[in-house]
Structures are given as structure tokens and as C-alpha cells.
Length: 142
Image (cartoon, rainbow, N blue to C red; front, side):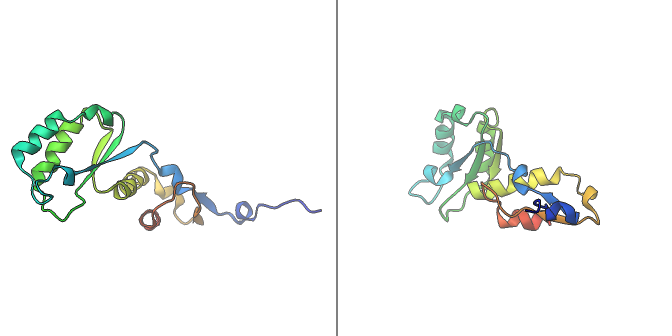
């Protein structure tokens, strides 16, 4: 019986596992829909009061994905207020759904890589992963 030959290693391909760029910290969604009057509009006074009474400690060390799941028009100050309240607890506060924030975090981590080391090299972006790498991350990495 012949020994098993690692053809990928022998080919000179450099394999990059994109999953290693995933920050595995918990991401919690903060849906502004829950603060809308009749799911249509945000009343500033009531919103500020609700934020003051909210238990922000539940986000300690976690990412917060801030978004609105309805088609309501949300003023930019609302997002700013959430960030101001959350900043002392959350690892970071990002705009978008959980899936969108996962992609943002991948891209943030990929931006920190020194890609010049791979110039003119044969590179393979690993396609299988336990957590699932969003298609936009493959596009970004390429």
C-alpha cells in the first residue's frame, strides 16, 4: 500500500481558512421595532426613557447588532442614543442584523491581515467551515 500524499501541500497552494477570521464573541440583536409607537414612529421622550430603564449590563462583552425590522423611518439620533447607552457594556455596537454584523466583523478582521505576503502566490480560500462563512466574505477576501 502506497503512503497517502498531501497533494494540496505538494502543489504549493497556500490555504487560508476564512473561519479563523470570525470573532466568536456573542452577537445580540437590538431591534428598534420594539420601541416604536404602533410600529410606525419613534417618540423621542418615551424612547429616551426606555433606554434609561433598559438593563444594558446584559450586553457586557458582547456585540450589539442594532437595526429595525419594520419599514419605519428611524432618525439617526435614535441609533446614536443606543450606542451612547451601550458603549460602557458592549464590545462594540454595529448597525445591521446579526448576519450583517457577522459579515462586518469578518471584514474588519480581514482588513487587519497583511495580504501583501500572498502576492503572486497560489492561494486557496477554504470553502468548508463549521460556522459558515458568508459569500460576501469570500468576495471581500478575494
